View 1 (tube, helix red, strand yellow):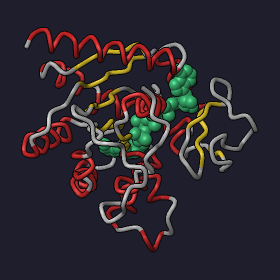
View 2 (cartoon, rainbow, N blue to C red):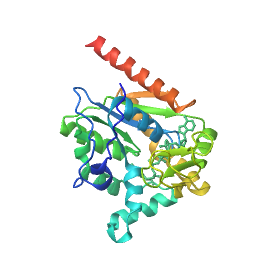
View 3 (tube, rainbow, N blue to C red):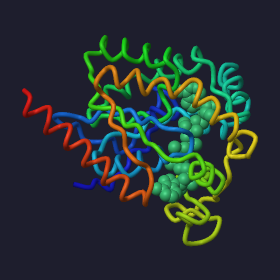
Length: 257
Ligand code: AP5
């Protein structure tokens, strides 16, 4: 079933003092998923489609940083200013800054509609901290989705990406163009190219992924949570592939119990 109402994710993007509009309805068994994969593989695009199908909220750490970057400098904490400096270069933000930010927003993990974590965790240390937090909160992951795509296709996706300044919707110059060039189909906001989609930053991000994030594949495999998904084809095809992998996992779990 598709839910067209979309939460504005205010508590996640702005911090716990902000209230979300259009909170997802609580469900009996919420989906609690982590989306893994190299930068540009299409995690954000999938999270958006999955959010419509599964109703769970899209929680992206990159979106938190970009949302802070769009605020005046005087409203940014020293830790956030440091984080944005790392992000613009394409480097990972230090674990301590990321973890403090996630911990402050840990209420979002208890959201009754579930969650789709995108871009977090990204290092073993973040994954271990998150596991402890989930256990302490009495929460369990449904699965970890690992999206896979050849490197040349990843670079082509990153180079052509355009993002809406206002609602953060994601487009691609050739693969997913907006109807009017440079304007968002959903809110008419202006489309821009992310600073970290410059070729130098793309190179640094892919290296950081290989060194720090790829080891999480084994980590989640060992926990029995990993589902690998081919990220080639149209976003809708990939989403259908994801839903069928999740359904198969769910069916296997219920026949085992
Ligand atoms: P983040 O925002 O998480 O970026 P990322 O992981 O690099 O992922 P991207 O957003 O670049 O790509 P995506 O996989 O979501 O692809 P998308 O759907 O947009 O992080 C940014 C930075 O913040 C990091 O570099 C780091 O500095 C910092 N940071 C964040 N979290 C952190 C953490 N936990 N620890 C430390 N630092 C952290 O798709 C890409 C393009 O392809 C789009 O144009 C899209 O339209 C197109 N596309 C998507 N699917 C398809 C398809 N099937 N066919 C054709 N085109 C497609």
